[in-house]
Structure formats: C-alpha cells, structure tokens
Image (cartoon, rainbow, N blue to C red):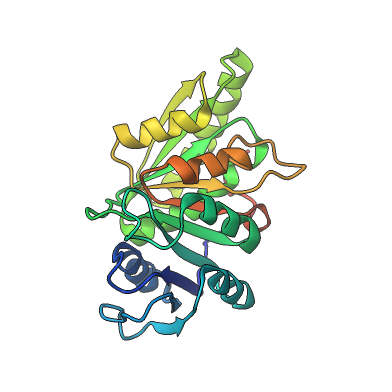
Length: 254
C-alpha cells in the first residue's frame, strides 16, 4: 500500500535560521505533490519557495494548535541542538509536541552541513507491529532516491528472539525489494536497542530513522514510548515518528 502525504507543514523560527527543513520539504512536495504550509515563528520570509503558503504564528504552542486544526499528515520540526540560534524547539519540547499532535512528525536536528538521505534506517524488533513502519520508509526512500537499511535489534540474546527477528527481517526485505527499493539488513542482539540504532546510524552515515512514537497497550515495540523519546533526543539525524493510529497493515509476507 502506497503512502500518501497530501498536505504537510514546516515549522520554522524564521527562513534563515535553518534551511534544511525547507530543502526536505521541497523534495517531499515534488514527490507527493503535496500542499505545503510554513508555520513561521519570526518575520524573515526570504528563501521560502513561492508555492508554499505561510502563516505567521507567535509561539510553538500556536504552531501545535494550528497543525492539530489542519488536515496535514506531517509536520517538519527543526530542533535546536548545539546552536540555540538554529532550529525552533528543543528535543524535549519536540517530544511533547509529538505526543500531543498524534500524527507524523519529522524531527530535524539543525546543523550547517545538512543530511544525506540516501540511507533510510528501519529498526526491527520482536514486536508484531514493528514491520508496519516499512511502507513509510519505502515512500521516504523513493522520495529521496535512497535505500533502506533494516536493522534487527533486541536486548534479548535468546535463540527465540534471533529467529523471530530474522524472520521479520526476511519478510520486510522481500517487501522492500518488491517495491523496487534497494535494501540492506543487519542483526544486532544485546544492549540498549536505541543505542544500537544510534551507533549504527553513525557507522553507515544514515540520513533518517523511522520509528513509532507512543507506547500503547497493544504495542510492545522497543521503538515506542520512552524509547522513541530517547531516539528523538539523542539522534544526530532526522527521525520520522509515526503515531500508532497512523500505522497501516504491512504488506510484508507473513
């Protein structure tokens, strides 16, 4: 099943504080043919593409309210990391927004070098729902002309966990290949799963990580709840957070 993003928003402090979200937005808009609204917290508008609508909002809280009231599927949220003059919100504020918005959020740590989106990382764990992130990763890989890197992880080194995750990896890699996207896979058992993914993203020079966002009663994924918060807080690359209610049934062969 193809993912459609017909409308999305970009939140900015001003047009010059962090141009990476605009660059990403242009790629997504070109691929999905989306309507794009820029929520601007400042006055500087230079560099915003003429086809993007602009709304000036006074605060981050106003941005969250505007997004919730909109029909947008996704918000691009630039993070202040090493330089408070770049980005718009801290990782802690971003996690609060993610929980409140309950829709897809792409958090983007702002730096001066930008990112290479040729490598999209999809963590796979032992939960049944873990494979449901794959259609989103496929769409992002196609939008940016990239490949998908599937990383199987668990803090459990048991043979049962290894067999289960390897089965899931096989299913999702088959699904990704069928969609015409290049895919690579690796298995790493033991240790903190979030740390495993972050270390892997550095090793391969990854461009984006795709995760779930909130722990629910039927979700036992490592990459939900507090684990997703750790990912957003500590990742040096963009993280696409998908709320469970957005998840669709994976096309992976069971």
